[in-house]
View 1 (spheres, rainbow, N blue to C red):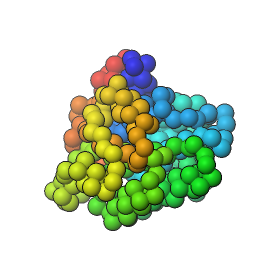
View 2 (view 1 turned 180 degrees about the horizontal axis):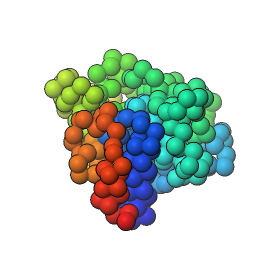
View 3 (view 1 turned 90 degrees about the vertical axis):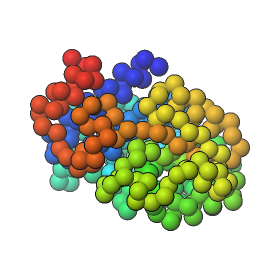
View 4 (view 1 turned 120 degrees about the vertical axis):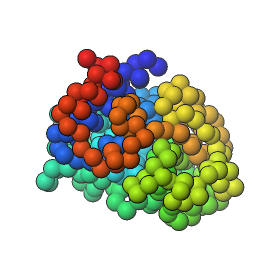
Length: 268
């Protein structure tokens, strides 16, 4: 697991550098989900960067689309395209849009504009694979703020009703959203109880513990019903002056802050 910890650190630093260079926001939201993405892309997903569209692949769908830079950077380190390409993020006519768009780069499975819809998309795709008797697995990463949207709960009922054991919902529960504290804006807790009441198997895990995340995903594979993993995370994780500071939902780091982040991540 030490290898994955080092990969996570490199991805975090690259994210900071991209934000500074391209003047694109949502750094805090991206940093909170890096350990989840690292475990998925290096340990769990059946994918092949050289055959990105192979029929038997697993699907990762980013619902919290404002964390697009986290997905792009993970894909680059996983070998889907060059890391240098990431510095086109958010630039005019770039495929690396601030939310994944229709012309997204290789490895991005779905667009993500208005939040709250990706779970519905994934349940439809998962049902289609069931009908075709295919073994593809679907993993959907949502932000806690997205749970304010009713479409999430419609999809939750649908997946349980159709007995979709090929879908895993992951909640990046960093406790903050763009306008404030998530649980003060909407009454989210108890999350496990809510998802269980909708017919899902639930797992709660430290979203920054690589070993625990891997165990949670392996457990999910063995469950014969839809699974929701509630991952307790920290917005801005890995960089002390960004952690739990909601200003970093939109703030852009300075060059000095990028360098300080690099030092804190142990990459000097």
